[in-house]
Image: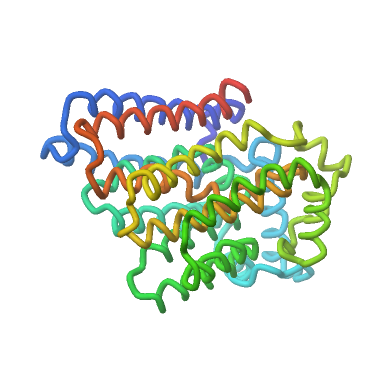
Length: 367
């Protein structure tokens, strides 16, 4: 599938497509109010176009381990299932069940398309529930996030699990929310971390404390270094089947795959955009009546603080994603719910464009 596109250009084409979309979004935001009927109609149609593009383009990508990371590993496991070999270690119940079931009725290419649907459809549904006619901006922020492509083509289980977690947050009844959070943890156990934080927010939801915890994590990480990697390994917080010890403990095999380790100031600055947004709206603007947003921010702050503590680890970006998957929503949510600025659509357009340009810088220009 999609063999007409040279595989070495496949990833970049995704980002150039969204460069055009984000430029268009920026330009129109300078000329129309966000609630203009024409603007809403065009953006609604554009939402469906983006949805179809993402599902088809990611879901029908060529099979490659060189360009799409763990895709080859998933394909090899799928092949073993399809031939009746059942010696695969099973740790993520629902994902393993999905793979095993699909392997009996369809080729691996269709399995990857189903995985993409499970990755994207929950986001489409959740953003509609959150923002109604302003869905376009939130959905766009999610699919242009720095790690979105990677977790749709490489870390499939984690990507699906985080999308289901966002779906859970969009549910109104707590029983439904908890059900979908549980489902997310069964696609990837690492979602236990934001799941536990979500539960904590029902007993304590003071954002100022979470801000202090996030700030404290920086000097604690700088001073104590590898202590935290060993600590989290020992308590089993990140225990899953993804070569965890290789992620947390420096190992030459994984060093070769993650070109830059150490205290990632670039990633910290990226994370800080969400922290600043949360502080600006919750503390400075006293935007605390929306308890869902407050919970979302507190999950982000604490999960990101945990990542900061293990920031030197190989593949620390995988731990960062336990907070980063919420970043686009943290930044854009209040702007689609309440009016803060006189020319708010212009502000939204600028934020979308700047947010994407960081993604473009990291994944295209500096890649």
